[in-house]
Image (cartoon, rainbow, N blue to C red; front, side, top):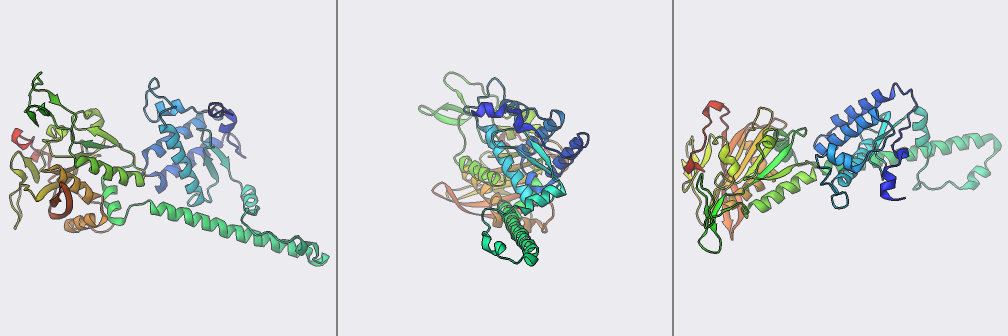
Amino acid sequence: MSASARLDDTSDCESSFSLPNTQAPGKISGQIERLLAHQLFQHSDSNRQLVAYLGKRAIDHPGQPVKEIELAREVFGLSSDKFDPQVDSTVRVRIGRLRTRLVEYYASAGIDDEVLLEIPKGSYCLISHFRTKESVAHVHAEPPAELPSIPYAIMETAPASTKGKTQGRMILILVLVLGSLLGAVATHMIERQRSKRMPAHLDQFWTSFYNAQQPLTIVYSNPRLSGHLWTDGLHYADQGEEPRPDLSLNLTYTGSGDVPAVRALTHLFDQIQWDFRLESGAHLSWDAARVSNLIFLGRPEQNPALQKLSRLSEFYFQTGRGIINAHPQPGESDRYSNDSEYDYAVIAFTPGMDSKRNMLVLAGTLTEGTRAAVDCLTDDSCIATLLNKLGVHKGSKVPYFEALLKVKINNNTPVWSSIITVHPYNADPSSWQVPAVHER
């Protein structure tokens, strides 16, 4: 059977419920809510969206097949006329991950749930089964292939008076061994899931920043440059400068430190299956930004999107002067600028574009500083130092702050960094100031 034929087969979408049809929708709906509330599904937008969509389809249109292009359009927002399933595996990959998550859930937390949800291989349908006591007993009574066989002669030569007792003991042994195997499998699946979680301090910081039910967007630096690389060289375009034939406006460059920075964030989020979007600072859609948790890479001069936001309240950039410390504490300088050996970088955790979103600004005076800021927030020990300076206890939510890093550079690579100081973020909107031209 071809893949396309298999996906159109309605038999793959039929649920088997041993209860009245009037009760089935409520049972399915309750099980979906149970899944979405479990931590296995908390940190993946795609899994949550798929479960919600496929669950609604199963309730509203039981037995009807679900097509790949339908999921691409309705769940992932992909255009029907541009989506080609032959070259775009987005739906297949996401369905595969969800299928794995369902297996893990029912092997651990959901091992006693009465409603079983699954996505059969070769299908995009969410089907359901009602697990009765009889069906559970039947499943537990079936010995797996790994169980040692019981010699036939033992049962054949047993005296007639003890044959029933012997058979009872054999069944009891099978049930006990099978129960042990199921317990081992469940423990393995739980440990496997634990291994995918972040270390304690990383988890404390990032779960304070990110809400799994909202979009996450990384905005990389994409500076507006003028000039020609092969003639008069490139330079930052002046504010309001219009491109001319001899002075073109370039939007095809990013910082060399941004590339490994994005890789580090991608690696972290992929491990814990957090979805995110990657956007250019020069082409950021503010409609999308308004509803997202945002991570900006690079200072305002490098990341044009930051020029449209309010200036940071504690540490901000001035052209040619480095980072300005707006409120120096005892022992702190009022200005930090880079040299041939050291760079400085800001880590700012602030409110987003509305009260329900958050924002991170990770920026160095050089692109190497930006990379070091990201390296810190993807390293458990660095975050532990940061939380200690903030006075944040284990399990507490991380408050908004602005921190300053000193970064040692060798051959255009950050080799170590240290947190110089951390200031609480001034969350009073009236204190926000739009950056001046020389602060970009």
